[in-house]
Image (cartoon, rainbow, N blue to C red):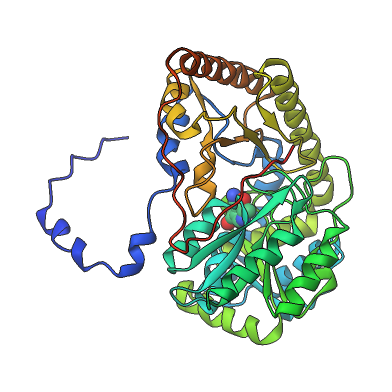
Length: 440
Ligand code: PMP
C-alpha cells in the first residue's frame, strides 16, 4: 500500500478549539487508548486491552453465512433499516436473555451499535449536566467516558469480593441526597466485572434491587460478560426480578465478535420509545448488515456450543494468570480469582503507584492498565487491571514474570530511597470520599 503524504500543518483547525462545546472538556483519551500504540508492539505482552479472543470462531461457517446473506437477501441487508433493529434479531435476543432468567418481549428490545452505544443513549436520554450517576468503585472506563462527556457527576460506591456492597450504596445515595443533587441511575456490571473481576452474589441481588426501588432509582445493568462464567450456569439478571426499574444492556461482542458492533438495550416501554428516537438521531438505524449476519449465525450455528468453547478457553487463561501471580508476585500483592470474564484486579504493595510505574513496565515489555483509569475521582493509583483474555497462557505467564520483576525493582528502590511523594489522591469535584477496595 502506498504511504499517505504527510499532512500539512493547519493553523485554521487550532483556531476553532476555543469554540468547542463545554462537554468536550470531559472527552479526554482514556489511559487505555494512550497505551494502545505501545502495548500492541509484538515484543510487549499486553495484559492491558480487553480484546475478546475470537481466534476460536469458525470463520468458514461465518463466511458461508455472510455469503448466503448477500446472495439471498443482499438488497435488504445493505439497505437502511428500522431504528429499533431487525425484528428477527430482537426475537433471538430475547432467547439469549432467557438464559439469565429474563422474560421479555422483542418490542422492548432496542438494538444498538455495541452496548457502548446503549450506555451513551441511556445517558443522553436521562442526564443533564451535573446529574449524578452512581457507579461501582472501580467502574468500566468506557462508561465513565460517556458520563463525563454528558457532564454527569460520577459517585462511586464500594465493592468487595461479593460485588457492590449494599451499605456502601445506601451511604452513597444518602450523601448525594444530602448535597441536594439528583441521582439519575445506578450503573452496575453485576457479572465478572470490568475491571474488578468480581460478581454480585445471589444473596445481594434482591437487596440492591430493594434499595433502588425504595429510593426510586433506575438501574442500568450492563452485562456483556454474563454468559462467560467458567464454572457455573449464568446468574439470574437483576432485570429478571425487576422489569420496571432496570434497563438491561447486552452485547454480542464477547459471545460472538465485536467487529459487528451489535449490542442491545431492554427497557421498559416509555423509555424504550425515547431510546429509539435517540438511536434514530444518532445513527438513523443500527447497521442492518451486521444485524442480519448475527441473526443468520444464531439461527444456523450452535452458538451456545461456541460460547462453551469460549468459556473453556478463557478459563484456561484465567488459570494461567492466577497460577503465575501466585508463583511470581511479591507476597504483598493481592488479587482476586474471577469466576468468569476477562479481568483480574491487582492491588499493589502500599505506596506503589501503578501509573508512575507504567513506563518502566513497558520498557520491560509488559503492559497493564493503571487503576486510576477506572475511577472518576483520582483513586485507584495503588491498583491495576490485568486482562487474561487475549494472550496465550505462555505469554500470560511471561507477562506476569516481567511485571513481578518491575514491581520488585520498584519496591527495592523505595526501600533504598524512601517513598516519593505521590500526593493525596484528588477528590472528585463533588468532594465525596471514594472508598478503597479489597476484592481478594
Ligand atoms: N460494557 C462493558 C462493561 C464492557 O467491558 C464493554 C467492552 N469492553 C462494553 C460495555 C462495550 O462493549 P460493546 O460496545 O463492544 O458491546
